[in-house]
Amino acid sequence: MSTKVIVPDAPDGALFTGCYQVQQRPYGPYRMNLCLEQRGTYTVRGGNVRCNGTLNWSGRGRDININLRRTSCGNGAAWRADRMTCRGAGLLPAFLARVIVPDLPVLQTLRCTYTPSVASEKPTQITARRTN
Image 1: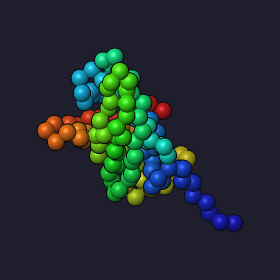
Image 2: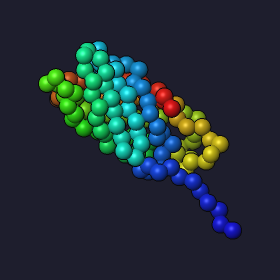
Image 3: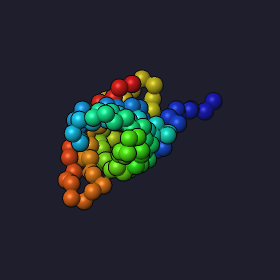
Image 4: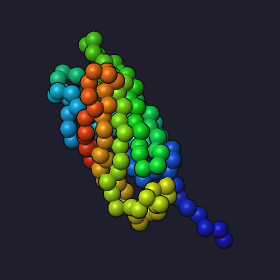
């Protein structure tokens, strides 16, 4: 009988997969949610704008790199192709971060540097909390 290890159906077998709500508002009145799943997505709501976009993400070491794809929000507006670099705040030691075991907790919070695609705008620190 062989021993089997369960890994999630997501790039890099990460324990941070799932959906998160960004606690801060990187730009004015806009609230952001993001889902780090096999097909990454994000939503932005506020200021009479509703954006539903896609994102690419990858895990490297302790970092989670997220690239938002520019998306049309309707009414002549679009969300920019910004990026984020995040680290998880959780209970798992680093050596377990690549294997999921059913009884282990998952990361509840991501601490991120949100970097606008416009060079004249400075990066900002944000926190995202798991919603699922």
